Image (cartoon, rainbow, N blue to C red; front, top):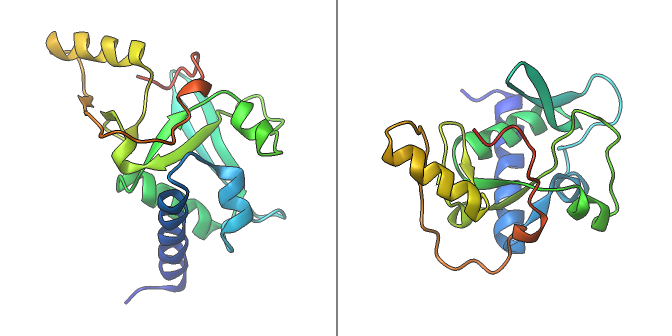
Length: 168
């Protein structure tokens, strides 16, 4: 039997996917926070999406409900949406700026926009990164699978964040 957290996380996850598909991406997490009830929580306790890589912690988003964090993890791990690492510009244009030095801005795209299937999630990466992954794959060193997405009109390709340290 599903508990309340799983039920609420499932509702939020479905709403995130619906928002990304309806918007045709890119969708900032600030937009998710604004448009999906139950995702955000501005008072303690709140949850944060943190990724550990190369000995450091990077935050994708904070001030979420437990169900909101569970939903975000669900849609990315189940590959229902793709992640694109970006500069802060899409967030500034969205009227949001996070003052956290460990924050890595991301946007969500429809899963069909992904050009890399990584061990953790679907990604959309810039051409130079795809080329590096193709070389690593040819040498048997990559754990990523390159994808050829169909044409997708709405991506954040102009807002790539070059130095994420997370494109591994």
